[in-house]
Image 1 (cartoon, rainbow, N blue to C red):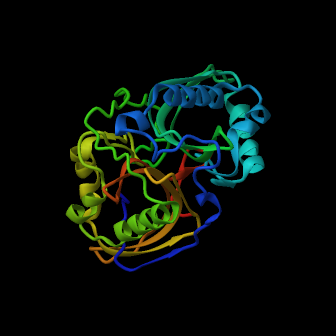
Image 2 (cartoon, one colour; image 1 turned 90 degrees about the vertical axis):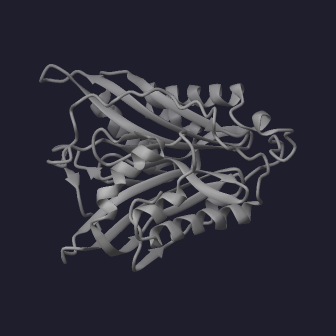
Length: 334
């Protein structure tokens, strides 16, 4: 679900460069015999978890270069938020390691979903940081997207965020709730992929249609059915599971406005025809029901699955960029 339905307009610049899918020599999804043989194969899940461990704990940011796609996109927790391409992302990682150099990352939860060529990982990671004040902890939420390129898994999209206190709009210092990994036992997974162009159009259309919806009931149709849903919202605790929890979280928001204008300076889409992802930034002017028109800047990323030709999100992250020094959210950043 896109958390702002669009009653007015949305301006989008889409890069098609990242839309190539299965390359020669990679396993064919279409050749797989059943959904169970395509989705969440143990070797794929193990490989993604190993990559996540390296991303969290490599002492040298340059050592991670081989894990990053040429056109990787990072939405960082701290300003400047948007990083494009391998070198910009490495520079951002180096900045994180300067802050967190004394601590090893510990994943408190991680949910991974994969096909043979595409994977998404939603996780929470905690660093125990030693500093002049005697130490403390920093916790981040991540939504990562990986794709097999030339036979190797590489990171193509990453959204790192912190949960905010709803009253102060500052990064929370309380431990994030830990709810365990999603198991996908009751998920509806298709083993019939659509072609790359159809996948691209489907995810772009999903985003456009979701942003045009006004009203909570209409917006919820863009979320996958069942219990295997995870959303990291802007505010603490922000770890939402099931459609019911997402409905309760977004309800007050959807009841507060009648329309909005959205500009998306960043909007990237990728897919393998079964599993897909989008990552974007949004500068929004909101038409509130009380007559005010506040402006905000948020970031959003989604992992979507295709079933019977229909795309629906089931892993989502929504966040504000945060000032590294103050921990304060940057509410509007054109």
